[in-house]
Length: 382
Image: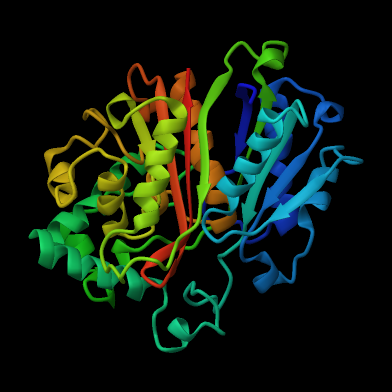
């Protein structure tokens, strides 16, 4: 396998883009990433476009081709990807695989989603799934894990709420984030109850947005940029049904992280900054443990120590995460990688992590039988 670099990134602010059509929204970061990478549209050899809900909401199909045509990119293979919340990182994994395998020298990934629409409702696993029909919509499954975690490990509602407070503070430093006004633990605990113990501010908001990256074989990246960022690992796994139902950790979470570290030849102690799938407050705490930042059962105490806040030992979600930056599903995981590149290039502004050299992006999507349908780990370094 060849070494692969990210040579350019682009992103829209996350939030409400009511007057911007879906295809046009996706085209914005494509034009930006081409400029950022210093590459010509004609030099892009393959592209992957991720979106998870556009078909359901807008009847959109094969959108990648239309999005890319706005930037003068055509006559190349274009693949459209849907894989729940990991749609963007799954597209990235496929692009990385193509370049690392020597099939192509350059690849573009764009993720896009519009979710700020009337009567959208709750994200679920699908109206034909028995679990969903019996009430296990996404907030419910995370609420079960939160209740079980607090019972097992003595965590408190206030500790869970601290995740939202921390990530809102980080978002206040990020001009691309959807919500940037400060909140307190009391604000989180007293916001409307969604599914006990998770309140409204314990849950990520719907958002519109798009993000893009360009990958290139390392042997050729210098012709485009003086700031390449190496892809040290890219892992995509799916869940299993072989273990008894476990209501707190996801087995897939731990397995994906282990495989990512093995591929990169690194360990949790080497990570300087991370973005993870904090769709709900409890999720970030559980991911701390899977990523190896603390022992199982110690995630809430790690958070409370301040070590995962900017200025701490291992800042997590400096972008504001899904909880405050927003969660346009098909774009989320690509945006995590954009944040990672900005951090490693020293371009993250007021939320910059000092001397960041290794970045980990974690994303997961879709509960199924106590595990998750997909999980990705991407590790970047300079």
